[in-house]
Length: 248
Image (cartoon, rainbow, N blue to C red; front, side):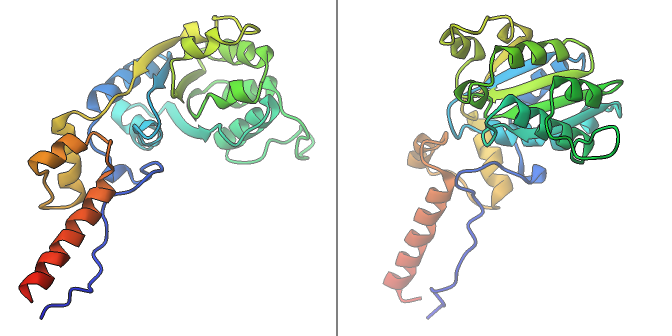
């Protein structure tokens, strides 16, 4: 009788972003759209439902953007906005992300507060593409109208392009905030992110595990309605049950 207790590693990930860019597949149209915009330092807003792959797309842009554009002058950075609770925290983390260290005053001491002026200094004479995940947090934590006005101004200097990810379109989010004008969302091209195409889905599963293909009924369940990690568990449980019934 074979060893039915052997644990098979599940090659599919449940929740969270895909951090290994070599395992990223599909989204080529979306990648081309984003890179064509940031190549001229334009900002773009990516929106789509939770767990559709926005964070993974941002991470992949940061990992491969410079190589795909074949331009050393472009610098890509990723920042998760969700844990941040104020504009000051945003500026501090953005400066640290871009400079690779805590922001300091001119005399070398760690700055107590960081402002948009510090971010302006961090991007001066550079071409920075800042990928901002969970950007709704700027509204939910009430970063304030001054923050959006300042960020809009910085994004029009030619030194900064923003790639922001949200669940809903920015224009829709801002319509609900009477204190904010629409001028901030107007600087962005809107890019909806939907499910993978069938061809992309096939490519994804083949890349993750050789020999894994969709059964006809499973193809209807995919498109991220039922995660692939759950399909894998169902498959392995089914295989183990068949082996036990056969006595192998």
